[in-house]
Image (tube, rainbow, N blue to C red; front, side, top):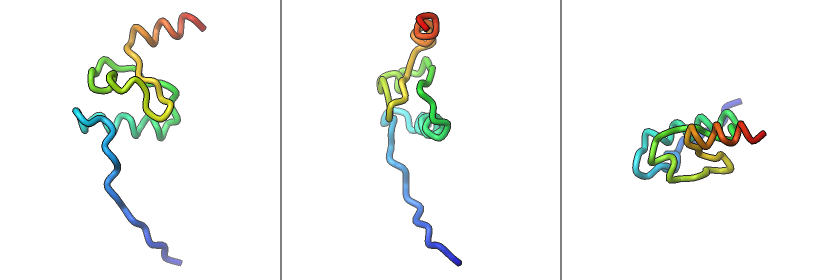
Length: 66
């Protein structure tokens, strides 16, 4: 049985750097709870769909506190 599939353009997440959208989509697909980056455009988001965007130092602090 055939199914109709509608392919749309995914919404932009990181307006200032569209290449970062793929990173966010990968984190979503992996059900990540956090992403670690030094990328300023991504860090400006703070969080996306519950995925925290952290600097490497903030990630280390978070891990050390657990």
